[in-house]
Amino acid sequence: MKNIRNFSIIAHIDHGKTTLSDRLLEITHAIAKRDMQEQVLDSMDLERERGITIKSHFVRLEYRDDQGQEYLLNLIDTPGHIDFTYEVSRSLAACEGALLVIDSTQGVEAQTVANTYLAMENDLTLIPIMNKIDLPNNELDKSLEQMENILGIPRQEALMVSAKTGLGIDEIIPAIIQRIPAPSGDPLRPLQALIFDSWFDSYRGVIILIKIIDGIMKKGDKIKFLSNNAEYEINEVGVNTPKPKPLDSLEAGEVGYIIASIKNISEVKIGDTVTLSRETGVIALPGFKEPLPMVFAGFYPSEGTSHEELREAIEKLTLNDSSLTYEPESSPALGIGFRCGFLGLLHKEIVQERLEREYFLSIITTAPSVRYRITSNKDETYEIESPAQLPNPQYYKKIEEPYIEAIVITPDEFLGNVLKLLQNRRGVHKKMEYIGPQRVYLTYDLPLAEVLYDFFNKLKSISQGYASFDYELKDYRESPLVKLDILINQQPVDALAVIVHKDKAYNVGNLLTSKMKEVIPRQLFEVVIQAAINKRVIAKTVVKAMRKNVLAKCYGGDISRKMKLLEKQKKGKKRMKRIGKIDIPQEAFLAALELEE
Image (cartoon, rainbow, N blue to C red; front, top):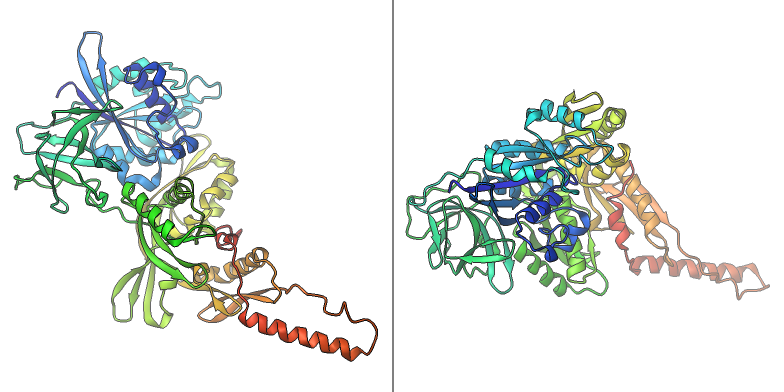
């Protein structure tokens, strides 16, 4: 066990985490030169295009040092986005150390701070790596100073590398062996193993990635999961090198995969503890929790897609993604669809894009919303996930919304604009400090609902792309929130309803109705668009009817002939307005997301 090292690589997006893992695979000859490609561990097309890691990966590297001593290095690659923080924390719990990659041209970013705190909570040994030192615009001194001031890591501990050119890469593995401790555990104790990831394979069932804390796990063992007491027999144990390599057993301190003919991924929970069926005294490892969806949106089939096709595609996606939840819902405007729950906005985007790409579906999505907490007049507390579920004000005492603690790091020249944006989004100022001559570190409490729409895009545009943002869920707080209904020809459209702050309702109502006017095509009858709170209309616009020239055939003669024809047209328009059906285009549902305040 003393020759095993379990480590992870953590970094802000685009700081070179995946490129560095490619170089480590090269150095240890884990992949033949002819099979080498960029982003080896990112298997999804989406991951390659966006340059982000969506799914955790694990690979065992074999390394022999100058003295001929052989080491097993288990690299546990983690997702890089705040939506997957829980998965990252479980992957880090399976490690003893981490490489903290910092882009020397960008310095310490918001996610660098968040990931460092996560690693420190798990008592990991950190090896800081200053990446991209080959670039002429690198600011090495500033970056090292920020690392010392914000993260409290001495600058002499940092390794200077360029993952792209390979400069300084040879120092990394000796540093991992020297600085990161070997795992502690006892092969003779009862089996205790941590699940840190899983996915579904059509041929073999659920494949589970585990770290053995104590004991030995062998093929043929009967195991059980402590969270639900489900029992299975192991068909295969092995490691990824990066191709799967079956072994006879895994011992304490080792990381690998197990296959046990499990058909349903929802039975395998990330962070759960595995032990042998016969063991009774094994306790669960700390830190386990059920991942809760934070953002909700309706998915409805569009033209050319049936409800059945959408249901099958979502079911297949949940096989690989146990954090995606869904339940049927129907809307008078959009028909039958599904209310889906996601870990965050990026998670929603990924699911939507995978449905469209991998299953060739055309779907309409409604505006995302968060989970609100309602206290009824009888002091009963329950949660709602969509504006349609919000009861009338006379039936509840208070409504609470989720708040997050946001970290924003920005150059000081954009500080005024960033503060204005945070205040517009109902932010509560907590802390502001300079972390260098020209960089400011801000901490704000913000309602999660205010971050959902275009906050990230706005922040990037007002700071010319230099500001970075990270957050974690904090608590629920009472707010004066109201439901804003959108009525089209007096008919409320559920999918367009939004829950907004009372002070913003009038502005949002005006913006939404005028946006609807732009995107709803003109009909042969007049279309009235209204925004209302509790049936009281606060904003209204009208899409004028297209007028057919009924007087074209009327030449000469008495004026009463023309009046008669116009009167007849007027009555027809009235009747048409009553029975006419309006097709609301997809843009109308997206309009709620793009409101310029």
